Structures are given as C-alpha cells and as structure tokens.
Image (cartoon, helix red, strand yellow):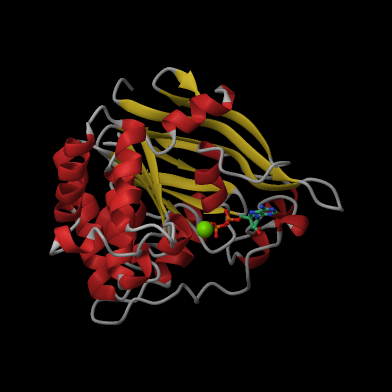
Length: 330
Ligand code: ADP
Ligand code: MG
C-alpha cells in the first residue's frame, strides 16, 4: 500500500528476568496509513504500551527489541540514538494516560511548548511565542496568554491532557502514538479529547495509533483495529467488520463486555479468568484456558495469524464457530 506511513513487522520485545527472558510483545505486525486512526485493543498487560514504547525505543536498558519498524524509508530500530531522538517528539509524538509523567512539574507550560518548537521547527522566538498561544487555542485551553505561564499542577486533569497534546503537536507530527490518553478522565472530558484528536487528524492529515482497553472508545474513534492478547495480535480488521463479525473468541468476549447504550462505560469485566502472566503463557493458543470454543488443538498448537481477506486476519482454530455464534453487539 502506498499510503502506509508506519509499517511494523515481527516486532518482538523481551525483558530480562531472573527466570530468563520474558516476551511482552511477540511477532507483532501491522501497518498505519496516512490519516487513519488505528486502534490497538486488549486487556491490561496484553503488550499495548510495550508495543508503542518499542516503536519509539522508550524502554529500559536491557529490553531486547527485534523485528522492523519502517518509517519514512528507515528502520527506527536501527537508527542511532541521536536519529531516534530527532524522530521522537518530532515526526512522531506520543501522549500518555497520565500527563504528569510527560509534563515537567517545575516548568511553566509555555517553556515546555516552546522548547519543543525550538527542537523541531525553524521558528524564531517571536514565532515560537505566537505558536504556543495558537497551540493552546487548538487544543481548547481558554485564556491561553495567562495559562501559558502556569505550571502543570495548576491545570485540571482534562486541561493537563490538553496541554500534553499541545506539546505533542508542537512539532507538527505526522503520527501520534496515543497510549490510553483518556482513560483517567471522566466521560464528558474523554469525549472532548477524542473529538479533539479526530479534528486534528482531519485538519493535519495526521495518523494515529490509539491504544485503549475500551471498545466504546474504539467504536467512536478508530478506522481499523488490532486486538492483542498475551503479547500477540489475535485479530485485525476494520472496526465495523470486527464489531459485526468477530472471528476470535477473545474479541467476541471483549465485545460482550461493552456496556450497551445508556449504560456507563466501565472496565472490561465479563470474560472469565484473567490474562496469563508473561512467565506462564499457556502453550497452544494463549487464550485457550478462558475460551469456550477451545478444543484439543488449541491446547497444543498455536494458531497463526491468518489473512481472511484485505484488512482482515485472525489467529484462531475455530473462527468459523466463533462467527457462527454471532456478534454480541450486532
Ligand atoms: P498494556 O497492554 O496494559 O499496555 P504493557 O505493554 O504495559 O501492557 O505490558 C505488557 C507486559 O510487559 C506486562 O506483563 C508487563 O508487566 C510487562 N512489562 C512492561 N514493562 C516492563 C518492564 N520494563 N520490565 C519487565 N516487564 C515489563
Ligand atoms: Mg498500557
């Protein structure tokens, strides 16, 4: 595809432990296209954050990252430290669930934005000052001239999240990696931030990888989605298709736990059991102990991620039975 901007192939990330390497992301491949929002979905611990952090090489020393991450004709995993720093926060920006981890508590917001502008644009001091005000306007922070001189702790949670997005946008990124950026916010603010991200995508043709455990957010925000379980992608497709015809029992379970219209959004609770720890990923299909469709093969043989057509794939031995069972939200 010519409009692919980011291409992740066989991304595999392991951490050292006393018991040997623990693989948090295992053979993950996906593409992100120009101007699309790609959702990366799964329960806590499935490897979503490690995937984003591997792409940006923001992992502790000792983490082993394999595979390729192709961006603008280069493999980000092979760039020098200076090379990846230039891309990070420049062409590719990242925002996090907890803005206080990304914001510097002892610097006013103005400095944090203008520093990023200095690092990634050619603007002079006047240009940077004007652009900083403009960025606060864009992210919907009123009274920008005054608020620029405030510190992060003087902002509410929603406003902090907006400030972090303003800093992330300072470099005019072509790709935004968003790691559960609305999870800590109440539903009204969450919707405002999601709409802001969609507006920015429309206005600047920015691409977004949106990590979330909330399928309601995926439905409202994403074009395509990839479902992760125990470090692997188990299903991909357009959001419409996956919601209408889940092919993996795990996806179907996630959909079944989305509160229906009228109910409050909440954490996913309804799949029985818990995801495995990295040291105890079951043989065969990692989901088999929790799966009502599982047979003998599932306990011994890992299903490969298999193409079902353009933009559609699944890693399940019994996807026909899962499709037959129907979508809980269709
Ligand atoms: P999530 O899908 O919730 O974002 P993560 O990507 O954060 O999940 O984590 C995936 C797995 O990797 C988890 O089991 C987590 O404990 C483990 N992990 C994450 N970071 C590290 C680290 N720095 N060292 C060791 N294990 C880690
Ligand atoms: Mg995470």
